[in-house]
Structure formats: C-alpha cells, structure tokens
Image (cartoon, rainbow, N blue to C red; front, side, top):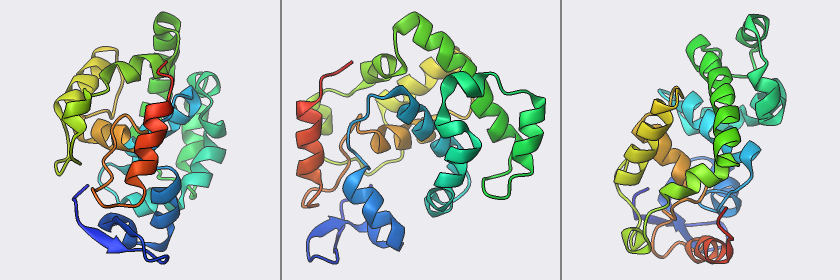
Length: 202
C-alpha cells in the first residue's frame, strides 16, 4: 500500500486506503497485516484474494460472511470433497461472486492444500517459508508484488494451485501478515510489528 496517511475517526494516522470505505477501517485496524498461522484462515484469505481478481476489495469484504457460509468456513477437507453439484449450487448463490473459474479454483486449491498439508505438516508451515528477511521489510511496499510473492506464486502453481498469480499472492501476504505493509506513521504499524515479533513461526 502507498505510504500516504489519513486521520481516522480517533485522530490517529492510518494508511490512506482504509479511509476509502467505512468497512475498511475495522479490517485495517484489527486484521490486515497481523500474522496468521491457522490453516483455515490462511485458506480463506488466499481464496478471497483470488475472488477479488478484477473486482474491488470492498465487494469481497461485503460478501465475506456469505463466502464463509457457502464454503463452510473454508474447511479445506469439506471443500476438497465438493462435486459438480456443489459448483452449480454456488453458481446460483447471489451472495457470493458467481464466477465458475474462481469457484472451481477454490475446490481445486482445497485438494492441493490437503496434499500440501500431508507433505509439509500444515499450510502455514509452507507459506511462512516465504517470509522476507527483515531488511526487506524496512519500508512498506509501494508495488503490487515482490520477489517473495513471485516465488510463492510459482511454488503454488507448480503444485497445481489456480488463481494464485504474483499480484494475488502479494495481496495475500499483506493480508495475512507475512509482511507488514502498514505505512510508516500508521498507528497500526507498530501493533502489527509487535504481533509479528511475538509470533512463533510454524
């Protein structure tokens, strides 16, 4: 995210992007950039970033609870068993993004995630291998991808994942706290950094 700031409702400076819509503030303050090691939450985040492709994040965030309901809280095992009948059900669900390719990608990726968990022990353990060195995170990124995102994207694609291009993966890395892209001066940046410093890597 760009390094510009805006004054939040409490007067504290925050990343400018979270002032673009009312629902962004809560997401920015309590979730974005904070580290995640739970596999279901990680899977949800990478799926939602895939659904966002070509759309606004506001659209996805507004439909988030619908996505959770439709995909059983992103239970990897349950989604991996989805059939064509489930695809048709989801294509009729007006509460989510009804895009066949993206829906089928979630099901495919759940199967690939199961395989990855079997080989690596957890999805988190695999993803956190791509955490940048600290000196690479000295300042928030102003671009839409990074060397680490490109590497993770390539690794996932090699394992058969879909809708995991470098831009999507970079947004996922930002969202799940693999990097801390809060702008310098943002009141949340230090909180996210503190959470990352306390985290026991998987």
